[in-house]
Each structure stands twice: as C-alpha cells, then as structure tokens.
Image 1 (cartoon, rainbow, N blue to C red):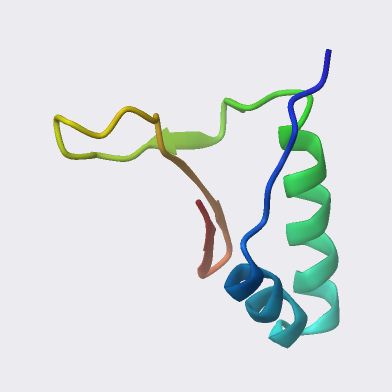
Image 2: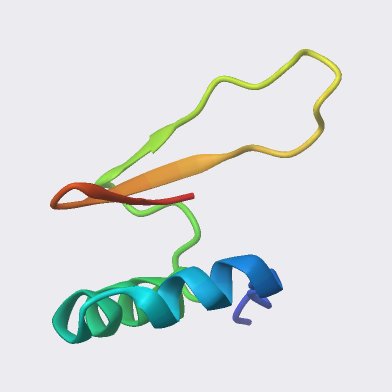
Length: 66
C-alpha cells in the first residue's frame, strides 16, 4: 500500500521555480517516496527529542528534498 505524500504550498512554489530538468527530477523522487519512504540514498536528519516524525533528506546535486 503506497504512502500518501503531502507537499506544502510553499514547497510547491519552490518546485515551480526550479529549472525544468531539476523540477522533473524532484517530482520523480517525491513520487517514488510514496512506494519507498526511506530510500537507501537518503540520510536521516537530527530532530528535537520531542519531535515525533522521522525526517530524511535526499540530495540532488546542490538541492535537498526533505
């Protein structure tokens, strides 16, 4: 069962501002996260102790998807 991906409005605006090829790469990675939320090329991010979600980032050239 795939996960549901929620993209905040400000993130949608940022994605629209990316160059075309980078925009396509980011959209592809985000779409794949629904099937595999912890891809092997992602890194876990540090969060405060009371933060209950696991945050991960994926590097795409000089960009990061969190």
